[in-house]
Image (tube, rainbow, N blue to C red; front, side, top):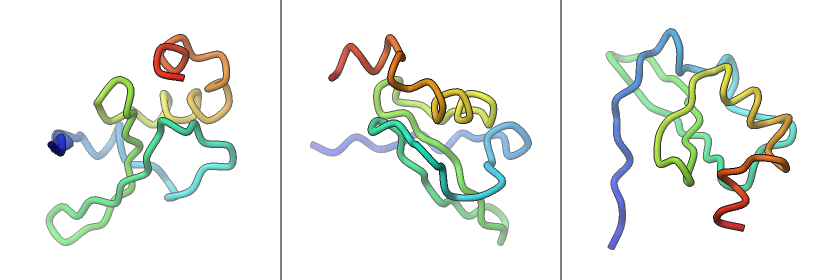
Length: 74
């Protein structure tokens, strides 16, 4: 059974400037979405089952090894 990702994003806080991260968490998935003819890249956390804000995605990129949520599934 496949879980459908929620599509509720607010572009100003969720859209990333680029669709690449230097050291991403294994539980983080970069997703390209299209809204009204514009393409956006957002970060989806598989553990929290939600899209991350830009600031949360940056923190996840740099501190994921110590993330208490990631430790629950690793």
